Amino acid sequence: MSRLDEPYSIGGVELPNRLYRAPLLECAGNGPDAVDTLIDELEPAVASGVGLVFQGASIVTPDGGCAAPNMTRFHDPDFVAECERLTDAVHDHGGKIFVQLGHGGLRSLELWHAEHRAANPDVDQLAVSRPPWHLRLADHAGLLDLRPHVMSTAEVRDLAEAFGRAAGYAVDAGYDGIHLSGANMSVLQQFLSPYYNHRDDEFGDSVRFLLAIRDAVREHAGDVPLVTKVPAETGSPPFVRERLSRTDGVEIARRLAAGGFDALVPVECSVYWDMSIVRGAYPARAWAASDLQPGYAAAFGGPVRARIVRALTRLQARRHSREPGWNADYCLAVRAAVDVPVLCEGGLRERGHCEAILGEVGEPAADAVGMGRPFYAEPRLGARLLGAGGGGDASDGGRRALCASCNNCTVPQAAGEPGRCRTPSVVRRRAKLERDGTYDRQEGQN
Image (cartoon, rainbow, N blue to C red):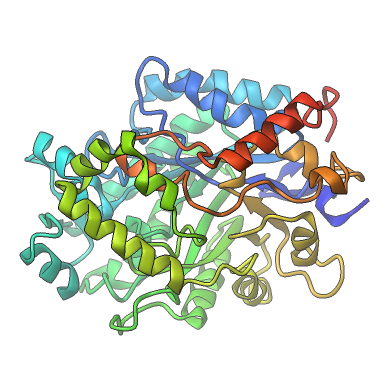
């Protein structure tokens, strides 16, 4: 048995293998078809043998906090109860499902999405402290619509409580664990980051907000496994002087593990929501698509501003390393400092890379490995990556995901489009594998 096929556990939840589907934007919203959309997005991964799937960031408040269009909210117990159909579907295949809970804080749609802002003029962004001067300058220049509401101590506690309530609803609906969206410029990262957090109350301690969420989760959801991303802001622009170093991130991880978190996901990112999150090629096809131009204009405030964002995307795509498993070194450092499972994701595309990170040869950098965008290209990817044969031979790339890291799936989400592969060569290759029966698995195979 290879390392990838070995079982392990997170907080007492047994998992059949060490491959997981990382959190993505399912773009399901909360409408009448939302649960069906979630099932369509997540069930294929576990049906293909993946042991654990993470439902993407689900917002814990009834308004504000969404970082992209069509995100799902988890504040309503009646809606979350309907998600039992999803958790049942996952469990029927022998898999487990954790929901990622989050809130955008300053990153929310109210900051950058022009059409949303116009439709919601009374909703401000929740802020940890007075926003950094770089954001205030962008606001003055008309590039952003910065209307921060700096939370009082009581409001911070209320937000932590909202995470706890959502976790309780999730456990009642059959979710196996809770994942906190602690990076990608979420409000949790904003509390952790010296770039954003200049509070003079107890929450000036960068970890205290996550520990308050832990307390609320334990109150409402019991001893459910609790996982969080742990950011290191190494991908930040050079003009940003206050940031989390990798050493800072390791210390945060040590405190969270000592504080009862059951697994950690170290990620190197930026203080901003930029291409450090989805490293890869410049998504030329997505930006050029004629059918998406109205959506981009609505999101960014007109065609001219959309072209500015497009140019910035091109520059950032050149700046960030695309090395497979770009978080591996950070994961290795965290794993040496904690005694809970460490999960690694970021640019993994080949089974060989996964095995190397899991320590097939040499020191393990992580206890499990995750992929995100490859599941947009191949919802049943696990069938090819798991098992002794990888579900295919060298001619069909059985041990490598088809995903080209071209980001043509991600940029359209700013215009409200669902996450799906838009690269014809990849779509054609998946269609051939489907015709050849490569993704077919016997029921219960892991």
